[in-house]
Length: 329
Ligand code: UFG
Image (cartoon, rainbow, N blue to C red; front, side, top):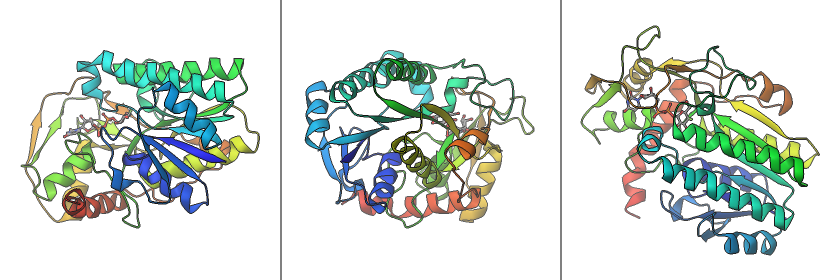
């Protein structure tokens, strides 16, 4: 029996692979290495270079490795890019996920864990937002993921497959043991960008919008440590294998930090006062989005262990410091 991790050479996927291996699982990674790295995949896992939309390849892997669970990370994840290239997002995140699901059904894979997103809520009317709130995504990224949630519900109703959809809030930080981290060049995510500015890898940074209806005018987000996020998948896997039914859960800490607060934290932790330019709003950004995590605590028995913005930032900084050497091989 093994677990197939799509996107296992990427940021979150590479943390997942370590967590699974630490738990004694057999792991197969399927990654086209478009944004992931071969070296990010722990050597005890089997890495197959290829596309999760490739039906023949996936069908072969599922039976050859006797896969009993698919954890599906591979996706395009940049909100403004989805606004500029919606068809690319619908192709990669939605159409190819349909193909992956079709292979899962055909091979009789019993369990599926899906990386969904807080972006399915759009601009929630209530904060913290719970899973039953209206789903009204305001960008193609959020819609591309919400459609997969719908497909999963329909597929699970028609076939013998149970699933967990996890709606991630803002994932950040790096493996506390320093084994992997956010390595993608040209990353656009706030903590990564701020850490690069602190280390002089870019000349300062911009705050996208300071006129939002929030306490300091910048956007509020719920930043969650990547290790706590992958542990939620372990909890989901355990529950599905024990016969738990289909479920969709937020994964966040339930409190928001503004962009300006995050930047201050990066400055404080790094000791570097880098330049911050205030600029206009970025396309597709909701003002504020914070998770209610009651359901995941209750149903998956998930408990945060790294709910500390300074720790998240410190580990992101440590990883970024050593990254050039890793990228050079
Ligand atoms: N931001 C800046 N300057 C930067 C980068 C980001 O001001 O250089 C701001 C953004 O405008 C936004 C906030 O920081 O207000 C967070 O932006 P990120 O790009 O880090 O993250 P997003 O909130 O856009 O997206 C993330 C995930 C999605 C997820 C979403 C849920 O990437 O997968 O959170 O809200 F859906």
